[in-house]
Picture 1 (spheres, rainbow, N blue to C red):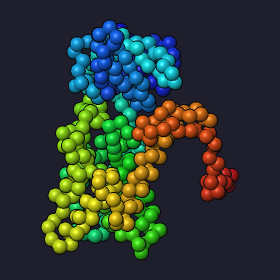
Picture 2 (cartoon, rainbow, N blue to C red; picture 1 turned 90 degrees about the horizontal axis):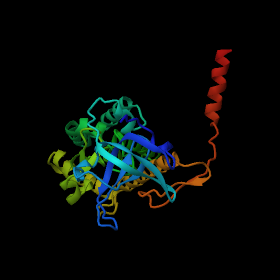
Picture 3 (cartoon, rainbow, N blue to C red; picture 1 turned 45 degrees about the horizontal axis):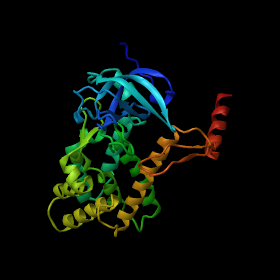
Picture 4 (cartoon, rainbow, N blue to C red; picture 1 turned 180 degrees about the horizontal axis):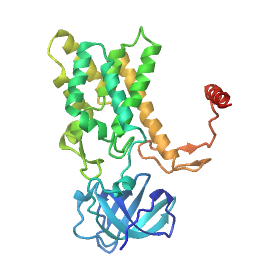
Length: 334
């Protein structure tokens, strides 16, 4: 059988497909006849859809979560969603460097090298020696992992280098807010908290060797949560002493408050971090959902938002600055 890769986003009711996809959220419900079914979610670089296989292979286990599989079946409409009724599901045997990965594995829509350099610039911009040392120690330990990891398993920025994109975009916001209120906001403290707010995910997430996506949450992640693991990492990286202890405590507070981990923000920088985190996460979830939604219509339910979102379809006009730049470029050409 020849496997192609029809993009999930462009599938239609009744279409027969054979292709490679990432299989996730595996379940084995029992049908009315008492036979086990395979239920899961298929993903590619642009979208996802549910899948049901009525006669799954006995080889399929929870260990297949996050694996790339070869699938054949027929797409069926189920309400407003499409579901693949699969005839066969098998491991694809795809390894690093395989061209299939480019079409199947979602990547952050960024220049990863440029973002990595910008992340380093933000670290180097911290002038407080105690805050700088904590950031430097944390990123020296986790840099390679951090640059490639998704931000979540199946929520916001759930793609390769999603954590890098999420963190740098938040750092840009933090920089602007600190510049707008230089007397009230400690710029270095806000920047350090922003850069480190998700560092605990290095211990909470296990990445798939095949795809680089989050394959499962570790025992530490399930039992403690990435916010507490991040706070512990800051305490580990901080040197001991009077100023260091205070700085470490406030940074830990910022991370726990940012993720609503049983702590209410009582520090200005913690409140700002919590709000820019919420704005960045929800903006990305809206953007992702709207990219799959026709103008002047509602999206499917977005689980992470708990609602459907509306694509108003109103076109953004060029700014005055863009128009002036366009006119200047035309004058130069003449």
